[in-house]
Image 1 (cartoon, helix red, strand yellow):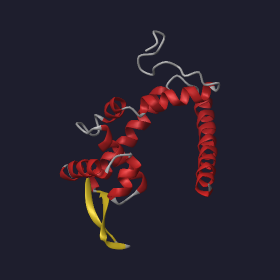
Image 2 (tube, helix red, strand yellow; image 1 turned 90 degrees about the vertical axis):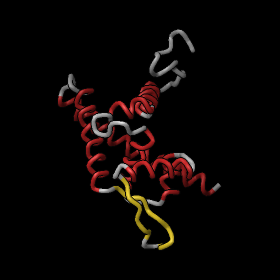
Image 3 (cartoon, helix red, strand yellow; image 1 turned 180 degrees about the vertical axis):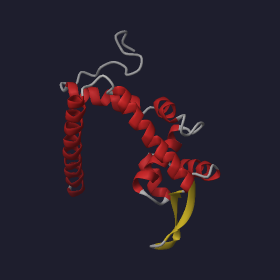
Image 4 (tube, one colour; image 1 turned 30 degrees about the vertical axis):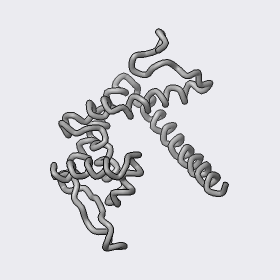
Length: 168
């Protein structure tokens, strides 16, 4: 590792866009197992990062088949089976039946699972308040406005790229 590399984010890759470089560093940090388990430890002590992410995905997208959850988590079927078994044993997730296909099972949050996900949201809100504690209200508002616009444009760009890939 480069001696100038930051121990948390690593060495810079030389992006010409400082904004892209900054976002990628935040994504890498916030997507790390250590960060995920640290930020959620008060809400869900003992949960590993994959379990936290699984609960978050079920909270965001609602009930889904295990195969869809595995795809979203980028893990195999056996891994998602282990994760969901633990989450079920802990009372966070339950299995239901897919009404569109009675043979297929669905994973969904229990009441306790919904409470934990609400705790994750609270933890994220506290984190953002702490990060922006020294910002003016005008700076917080402008950041939200710009990030919301970026989010919309990035989704449109991503969908266009996805459609381009499908037509190839």
